[in-house]
Length: 422
Ligand SMILES: Cc1cc2nc3c(=O)[nH]c(=O)nc-3n(C[C@H](O)[C@H](O)[C@H](O)COP(=O)(O)OP(=O)(O)OC[C@H]3O[C@@H](n4cnc5c(N)ncnc54)[C@H](O)[C@@H]3O)c2cc1C
Image (cartoon, rainbow, N blue to C red; front, side, top):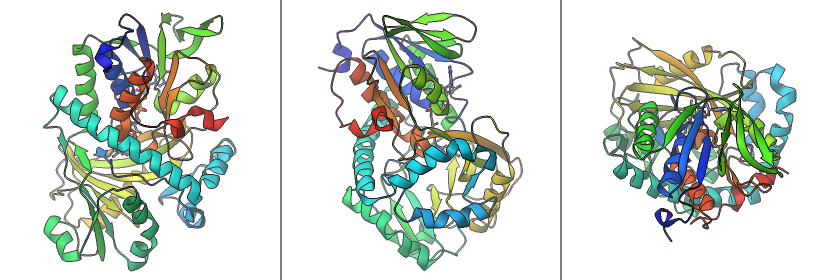
């Protein structure tokens, strides 16, 4: 049975959160025959989904917690503007997440994680291609592939296990010589000893525009976006039946999806489920007239940052900062990343630079939380996509619509269950 033949035609589904993940869930639920509302406290697509690097990183099947990563952490933390920072006032709250992160860094877990991620990536690739046709987004998504660059032999050798996982999961990639890299990316400084090209990767024209276009597509399908902040749920005989909003309104539903990005932990808790979810803050700078051109998204192996040429300019950023949801942004981090980018692109023009910070919703094992609540049959979770929320949003939406329609998803989603945090 296809989604559009789902039997629950008149049921009302409420999606909490209008980021890219919530919007994709809402579209898929609408196509499955539900009456769908998105409840969004601000404007759709204005949080993490607004200013990310815009990569459909469908080849990315390697978790952050790789064996051996821990030995790099002290060095990273010593550099206040390095690839990883922890605000010390946040450390006590972060300890359980960090502990689980360290435990995830073993080969058995990495194999399980990357197998689960690879299956979701296959689904999400197809799903993005379908939605792109359906919503007329062909000019917004460019399947260019990406390139990872290495300045040192040591870093290249150090990533052997990373590329082995790609090989094992059947993800295509191709090493490039410095000359081949120069042919593909003439504006990059000639400082790289190795590079690896992954053909399956794509970039979008502008992640904010993609979110807006998809929100419009959802509205055109007859969906509704309502304004309000979800605080809690109303239960009838232990079954959630409505969301209670900050302004006192109750919004009733038959099925509910928590897709509130980095803000989802409290809502999951209200539904009786614990989760280890942190805001992994990332920073970037967008240069509207960079004076240089990149033909592929470029990943820096040593610097742990990305350069992506969007239609709105060249975006340089990345890094991870654990400081919670409320601490003010530290834009020195954007500036530090821009400096690194200038080493790669010596002719870069800074005029009109715009800095940004966003909250990646991150779990310690790099797997999102996707699935039905183990407690309430009519509640579903779709959050925690970390570095890959734009990428995995389409596949997540598909899985959530299948589950809400009472169908088995086309990929095994056991590894994404919220029950792993019990
Ligand atoms: C620097 C950076 C670069 C990145 N690059 C990439 C990339 O290249 N590719 C990729 O795939 N991913 C990337 N990501 C990750 C990606 O941006 C996120 O994983 C993704 O945007 C998460 O989407 P979301 O819908 O879950 O969350 P969000 O976009 O944060 O949306 C959550 C929404 O829920 C709303 N909300 C929260 N609480 C409530 C409530 N109580 N009631 C109502 N509404 C609520 C918020 O207002 C928000 O609109 C990057 C992230 C960063 C920070």
